[in-house]
Amino acid sequence: MIIDWIENADMYMKLDERIAAGLRALQHLEALDQSPGWHQTPDGLAYLIQEFETADPNHDLWETHRYHTDIQFILSGEEVFGYTYAATLGPRTREYDPDDDIEFFSGSGHFVTLLPGMFAIQFPHDAHLPGCHNGQPAWLKRGVIKLPWPAPEQ
Image 1 (cartoon, rainbow, N blue to C red):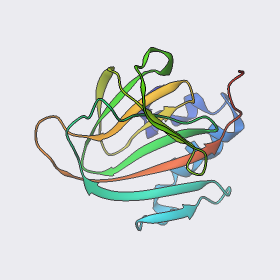
Image 2 (image 1 turned 45 degrees about the vertical axis):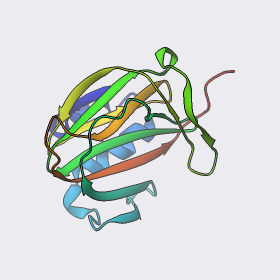
Image 3 (image 1 turned 180 degrees about the horizontal axis):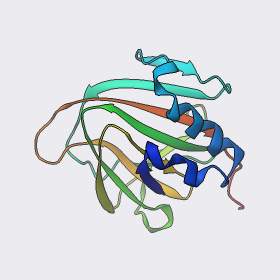
């Protein structure tokens, strides 16, 4: 898990070309379509813009992905965002959905508040609990860039 400000994105460009492509898109947010729905970056990466009211942290909905790394970014509002090492989670609460590359678990973890101008990178070994608030529901507009990623070794 990496959490930082977009202004520091250059520090992470050498980690992986896919990460670099996603972070380059964040450095030019004004060029991205910010209407709700699925879009593509200039480098051809899929990204989703969402607008919704934040929710109470539900500890049965920690999500993981097998074949994607997410770069999440905040456009407006703030998001309380949970993260933990996926191997520490409790029982699966929803079976793996291969179409959406997602499965859910119960568990607990750490929380951070993401603000406009911040990003969070979640690798397949990082479980996350997105879309939460810290006491009071609020409107959030955020994006998620989906980076194709190899599956972890079985």
